[in-house]
Length: 217
Figure 1 (tube, one colour):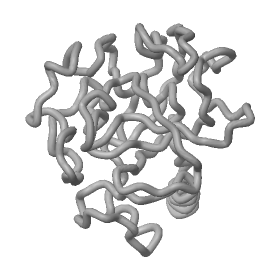
Figure 2 (figure 1 turned 180 degrees about the horizontal axis):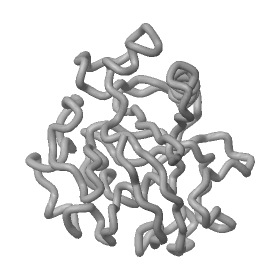
Figure 3 (figure 1 turned 180 degrees about the vertical axis):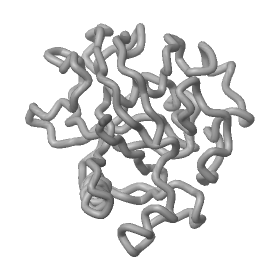
C-alpha cells in the first residue's frame, strides 16, 4: 500500500460533454490522506482471499479480472476481516487524484495520446500484463493508465452536478451502475486520467479489475 497525501485538485477533463451536448464542468475536490494499492489486485492476491480465480488471462502477477463490482466489494470485506484493517474500493475522486499525482495533463506522464507508447502503458494489445511492468506515477502507483479498468465505489452520474467535494464515494442517485476508471489494454484514449465509464454492478468483463484503498491511521 502507498500513502497518498491529502490535497485539493481539479477533477474531470477540461472539455467533455454529455450525450445531449451539455458541457460537464470541472470542479474542485479535497481528498483526505489515504492508502492505495501500489498495484491492481493480482490473481495471486485474489486466490489467497477468495480461493478461486475467474480471470481469463491467467498469471499470478497479472491483475485479477472478470470480476463484478459485487465481487470486488466482497473481496474487500473478506480482506478486512482477515487483516483487521478497513479495505474498500477507491472513490472516483480518490482514484483520479491518485492517478494524477499532482499533474493536470491527460496522462500523468504527458498531455496527449501522442505521448503514450507501449513502453509506458499496456493500451494496445489483446491481453493483460503483469502488474508493475511499466513506470509508476509520482505517488509510486503502477498501471493507473491501461492494463485493466478499475472498479470504483461510486454510483454512476453522467455529470458532476451535486457531486461530493470531500473525496468520498457518491452513493446517492437512482442509477445503480458503478464507476470504472483507468481504461484497459484496448484503447489509448480510454486510459486518460479523467476518462470514466460505468457498468452494472453484477457485470463481469475480461478487461476489468480493481485496486483497494485503506483508511489512513
